[in-house]
Length: 67
Image 1 (tube, rainbow, N blue to C red):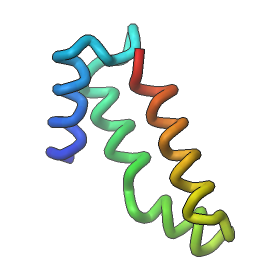
Image 2: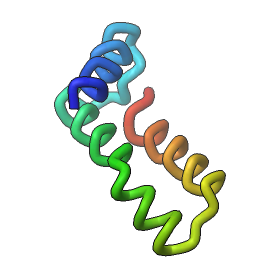
Image 3: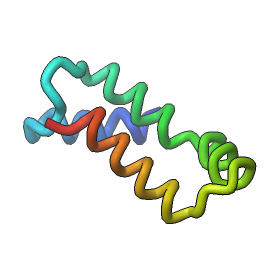
Image 4: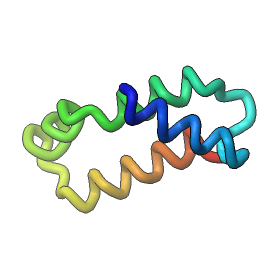
Protein backbone atom coordinates (compact mmCIF):
# COMPACT_ATOMS: atom_id res chain seq x y z
CA UNK A 1 0.00 0.00 0.00
CA UNK A 2 2.88 2.38 0.68
CA UNK A 3 3.95 2.24 -2.98
CA UNK A 4 0.45 3.13 -4.18
CA UNK A 5 0.23 5.95 -1.63
CA UNK A 6 3.59 7.39 -2.70
CA UNK A 7 2.59 7.21 -6.36
CA UNK A 8 -0.72 8.96 -5.67
CA UNK A 9 0.95 11.65 -3.52
CA UNK A 10 3.21 12.39 -6.47
CA UNK A 11 0.24 12.60 -8.85
CA UNK A 12 -1.53 14.96 -6.46
CA UNK A 13 1.58 17.14 -6.06
CA UNK A 14 1.71 17.78 -9.81
CA UNK A 15 -2.05 18.31 -10.14
CA UNK A 16 -2.61 14.99 -11.87
CA UNK A 17 -5.46 13.53 -9.82
CA UNK A 18 -8.96 13.63 -11.27
CA UNK A 19 -11.35 16.13 -9.72
CA UNK A 20 -13.37 14.66 -6.90
CA UNK A 21 -10.97 11.79 -6.21
CA UNK A 22 -9.26 12.08 -2.84
CA UNK A 23 -5.71 10.90 -2.34
CA UNK A 24 -7.00 8.14 -0.04
CA UNK A 25 -9.53 6.92 -2.62
CA UNK A 26 -6.94 7.05 -5.38
CA UNK A 27 -4.40 5.10 -3.32
CA UNK A 28 -7.01 2.48 -2.41
CA UNK A 29 -8.09 2.06 -6.04
CA UNK A 30 -4.51 1.93 -7.29
CA UNK A 31 -3.58 -0.65 -4.67
CA UNK A 32 -6.64 -2.82 -5.38
CA UNK A 33 -6.31 -2.73 -9.16
CA UNK A 34 -2.62 -3.63 -9.06
CA UNK A 35 -3.12 -6.62 -6.76
CA UNK A 36 -1.51 -9.74 -8.23
CA UNK A 37 -4.62 -11.79 -7.49
CA UNK A 38 -6.52 -9.82 -10.14
CA UNK A 39 -3.86 -10.77 -12.70
CA UNK A 40 -4.23 -14.42 -11.74
CA UNK A 41 -8.00 -14.27 -12.09
CA UNK A 42 -8.05 -12.58 -15.48
CA UNK A 43 -4.95 -13.97 -17.19
CA UNK A 44 -4.45 -17.41 -15.67
CA UNK A 45 -8.04 -18.38 -14.93
CA UNK A 46 -10.02 -16.45 -17.55
CA UNK A 47 -7.50 -16.63 -20.39
CA UNK A 48 -6.77 -12.94 -21.01
CA UNK A 49 -3.44 -12.32 -22.69
CA UNK A 50 -0.87 -10.43 -20.63
CA UNK A 51 -1.02 -7.64 -23.22
CA UNK A 52 -4.81 -7.35 -22.90
CA UNK A 53 -4.52 -7.28 -19.12
CA UNK A 54 -1.82 -4.60 -19.25
CA UNK A 55 -3.91 -2.45 -21.59
CA UNK A 56 -7.02 -2.84 -19.39
CA UNK A 57 -5.06 -2.02 -16.22
CA UNK A 58 -3.49 1.05 -17.80
CA UNK A 59 -6.83 2.28 -19.13
CA UNK A 60 -8.59 1.61 -15.81
CA UNK A 61 -5.98 3.40 -13.73
CA UNK A 62 -5.84 6.35 -16.12
CA UNK A 63 -9.63 6.73 -16.22
CA UNK A 64 -9.90 6.46 -12.44
CA UNK A 65 -6.94 8.52 -11.29
CA UNK A 66 -5.90 11.09 -13.87
CA UNK A 67 -7.31 14.51 -14.56
